[in-house]
Length: 140
Image (cartoon, rainbow, N blue to C red; front, side, top):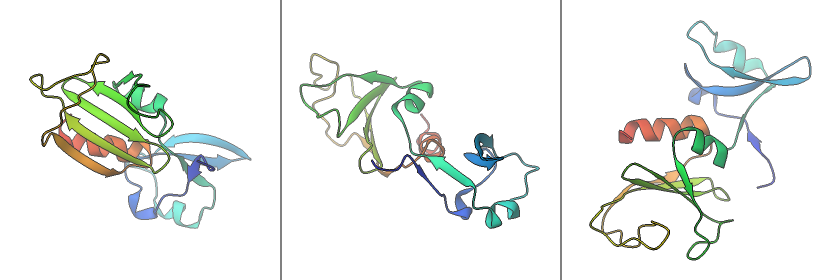
């Protein structure tokens, strides 16, 4: 990935949204509060959101599973949390969330090899804000 940041659509910004704002030529992390004025962001050219990172996913409680045998780590990163498995595809900004059924076959690394309709979500996920929303909607 060439760029580590993108400018979000103004319609995506809501209370709780995390972004970076440029102030005095420095980028500062800012979490939108209910008293922030969204109209300020329309005219600003100094805001950005970092693309999703492995560290952000881990900070949300997902355990990274090294899986060099079956998946190219540059293409897909595998994480586990409770009975769920997450495939993160950073080059195309997508994730896949699957339910791990204990009765299904797992490889030696604990990776589910038998899926059988366990997919809960597959689609775009560019940043931590979207990731949190998807996980919340899935009830994970």
